[in-house]
Amino acid sequence: MRILLIAYEFPPFIAAQSLRWFYLSDELARRGIEVHVLCPALPALPDYPVRLYDHVIPHRVWPGPYMGFSQRLASSALRKPVGSDTTHPVLWAVYRLTRQVLDQVLYPDLRTEWYPFAQSKLRSLLTRYHFDALISSYEPGVDILLGLWAKKHFSQRWVIDLGDPILTPYTPVWRRSLDRRFERFVLRRADRIVVTTDSVRDLLCERHCSIDRSRFVSIPQGFPVRRRPGDRPPSVHLMPANRMNIVFTGTFYRDFRSPERFALALRALAAPEATLTIAGDNARFHPLFDQIPNVRFVGRIDHFQCLELQRQADLLLNIGNIQTYQLPGKLYEYFGAGKPILHLQTGAPDTGAELIQSLDAGLVIENDVTCIRESLAKLIEAWRCGGLNALFSPHHDAIRQHSWENRATAYHQLLSSLSAMV
Image (cartoon, helix red, strand yellow):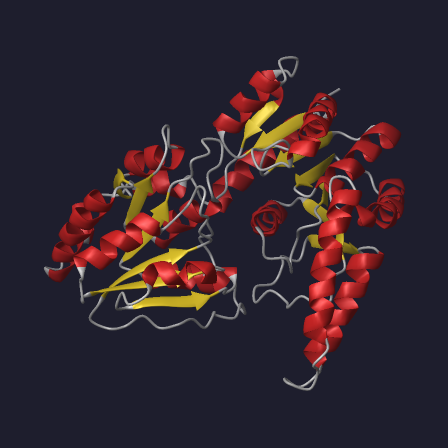
């Protein structure tokens, strides 16, 4: 079997869809599938410390004038000694401002500038090879636009892999009507629609009543279970000895994933035995943790370093999303780390909370200051007595079903059924 994946976000990108397809393409290739990937050439991004499997074949295409120029600018800045260039901060400010403008001019966003260059390569690939299926990874929307073109001109069997719906609560007001129509248009034309949660399927079927429910397949995010010989082990910040190490990896948001109540509880608890390590782009939340001892912000680190931090933790912190249709991939990474999870439930229903409870993989509590403080005190006391892990009896076989190996098995079944279509 041979498939073609269209994925703007693909290694060396570090993003949710990029990581999803790093693992899925690897596992599909292990099953004997020849995986071709149409993706942009972004030479300024650092290489992954983990290599792609041999049967994953990237076809990298110039990303377009704006991103192409920014990559050249970034490459030039990286080659210069630190402190030798006083102009590039201004250039980067101009870059960010210009990108914000272009995101409003091009639909769905700036990355659509890749379309004509990727389309030329796509035509060449479709002419040269027979593909049993073509997959558009979303987002960005340019991947879907290219898939639409291939479906129309080459009658390709087409799968859309949706990380999120196209129309979301954070879609700008001015383009919500357009996004709704675009979403309906592409869903009607795809042969299969892969979503990461059943709630996304339910949302889309309710929003677009004419869409056949049987064309949806739920294949969530996952976690890795193997390392290959030759992969470089990541270097990470070492955990303090003789402390209960609590770890959060990811991004906080004021509107739907705020750490404010956890910070207030930690401040009230005043537990010298506990250390909180926060990895991610969360500098704006520093003030919430001011003068709370043993709190470390290690900043943005790469995905593989995050996995290593999670494995070193005694307790993993997760804050539930208000959006019922979104379940961050980080939660599955936590399952793979094999450490207890403290989940703060902020909305109802909470798919993440239900999953943790069904697997007995941690403690689910209300996102309330008093409840957090009391629960933390009990967990710290259990750790002090050496019995933290004994509080939980995780269902290891059930957890293993959420690995990328099993996600790829589900994808393989989907692709096999699609290739058998008359």
